[in-house]
Length: 329
Image 1 (tube, rainbow, N blue to C red):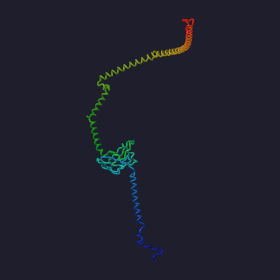
Image 2 (image 1 turned 135 degrees about the vertical axis):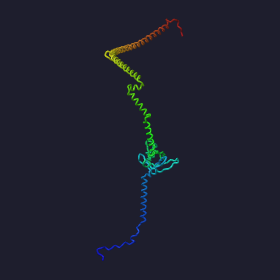
Image 3 (image 1 turned 120 degrees about the horizontal axis):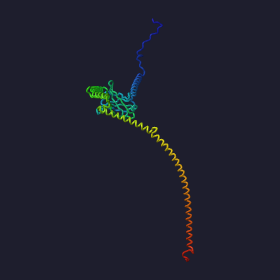
Image 4 (image 1 turned 60 degrees about the horizontal axis):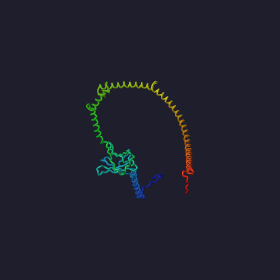
């Protein structure tokens, strides 16, 4: 018997309700596929944008003997920062490797015509492409430039370093041997030091024997004595010239007297100038009197000419004329 407090049992779902079709299922599936495809394409485009695929670039071609360790997509660095990416690796007709690198325009200003490019393969790790620009004031590197890549392989230098170190040790052993040139030079230096510490010292070493060294010493002693005598003579000459009874005080007194004479002479010259001024005044007066005498002389000569003409006129008049007859015209 069923308890009246319990709810009635729910009937089981019908199969038609479970398998009922969803509305617009194909449209929703297409929209989901389109959204997924757009998401994939957007992610790809973003990755390409992040890797600089859409940035304007210029091409740089590096040539090397081989491209071992270089792969497409690896970076070219400048001061540790990537400024380019390897786009293609190809074999040139000359037999060397050509590495084509895309450099973004915004980073191309770091590359100059004098830039150096290297392929460095370390002892641990892969190959690195590096650019070095020592003179940033040079002209920019043009688009499509071809430059050689210098090879820098650290592992290849190890055998050369070992060979160089071996040669260096052999040279050191040869230099430090007993019969080597360095040993003979050291022996000569020791002998030279002993001669320098001897009685004659450096002078005997320079002269070659003791007798010549003694002659040089005697000559130096005589020179010192001569210099002492010269010093005493200079002191006496100084006393005679500049001493109290020397020549210089008398010369100074003479100069004082000469100054007095010059002062007297200057006063006499002033008096002579005054006399000359008076003489010039007298000369001017004489010059004026001479001018008056010239005028008087001219006046006298004029009067004499008048008298002469008057006498002539009288002589021409009768009865003083020489010919007394009168001739009519």
